[in-house]
Length: 374
Ligand code: GLY
Image (tube, rainbow, N blue to C red):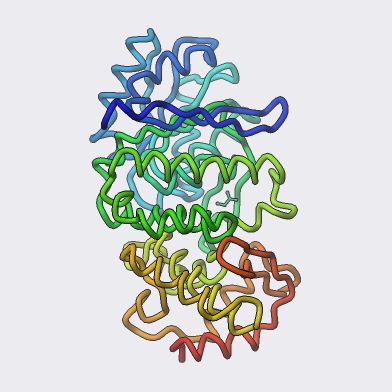
């Protein structure tokens, strides 16, 4: 990537647990120097998946070695199914076999699955050790690597067992996005546009004009989109680390989206970012149906999502119609639901989201049927 792009450093301000997130090209090459001050022994266990390790493992290992740091690889199979109790047992057992102690550091090197799994392993290994995030997907860079949410899935749902455990450092190297498949790039872009939709109209308008450049990985546009997203995430996390209030806004599109993912099997049929994209379009249209937001604003949100090649409706998300009742049942199991009452992130306008508790499930079901569910 163009060396005209300089590295930006964004702080997540959490008192003694504050940490920097660096965004820029070539950061993996400087990972050893960046991490050395955090190490008591010159070694780190690098948790990664087979795909990421094959593409970028040698580069990270060389960078660590240049700084005299040994990389101890813990490589797991790619895919969401690894983010399970079995996957966690495997990773923690390998960390024990490496005789990692509490003064050591784990490096999570991969996309959201690796970050969540390695982060949760760090949260519980010997009652908690430090970790660093080196996210290698757009989605992980702009969302999951920042803010300390770590978790695994259970057969009953996604991210149901986990902990808040903040990393010590995040290195978002824009160069690695060059090898990211276009579909994953678009899925990550859903989380970028989310920031514009939930809290920054000017950024939303910028994205309307620059989506093509971001998705084509044009260096300046990409750097701006990633950095702006992380600045927003850092501000929200600093204000509400454990999601007692404002952090819930980051779940825009997620209540609808998780239900779509549950129905499509949490896999390649509908990627998480794609489900969130369709979920955000639905959240805006549901907001309009509830009289909260103007219909034209909801249409503009959907148009921006569709223009990025992302699903913006139930029909875009799956060929076979969804069953409204089943979707609502999934929503009632969502972590945000309380006593079975549905919580949604809705919109007042483009750039202003709100938390709506106690949403009537019949209104949601009626809306989903209007959207084509059966
Ligand atoms: N991914 C939403 C959050 O970190 O709160």
